[in-house]
Image 1 (cartoon, rainbow, N blue to C red):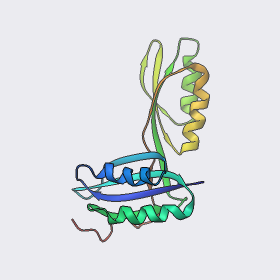
Image 2 (image 1 turned 60 degrees about the vertical axis):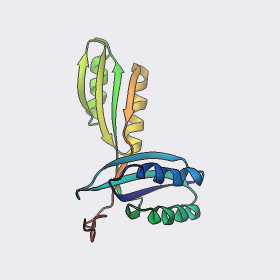
Image 3 (image 1 turned 180 degrees about the vertical axis):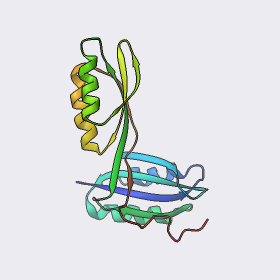
Length: 167
């Protein structure tokens, strides 16, 4: 199975996300990542979906998504598209381990968001493999809590998903 990243431009309407996710569920596809946010055009949002499927069945789902009312455009992004994860990680620290954790933060170009006597909250942004490697480095210290956004992705070059879209 291969991973596919879809960028879906939609009108801001209640229930649309449920209908889009339902199309994947009915086909038996597991959504690995889902991110939704406003776009540069007022009244439109962008859904980024990462799904692992064999190539042929995905085409049918994208056609069905395109048919949904309130869906403006569906684009499957190239594997070379810019893709980033965003994570917040709370790591257990003490006086002996804090400097080692902070060294890892510097090495991975992450940021410390909060420090208390027994924990540090770290923010990291990067591709999926960078975030996974950072987690592996932090695991021996004890990850107390972690939250991750869905993958955000955008095609390279000057073209935009919202080109020729007027609202």
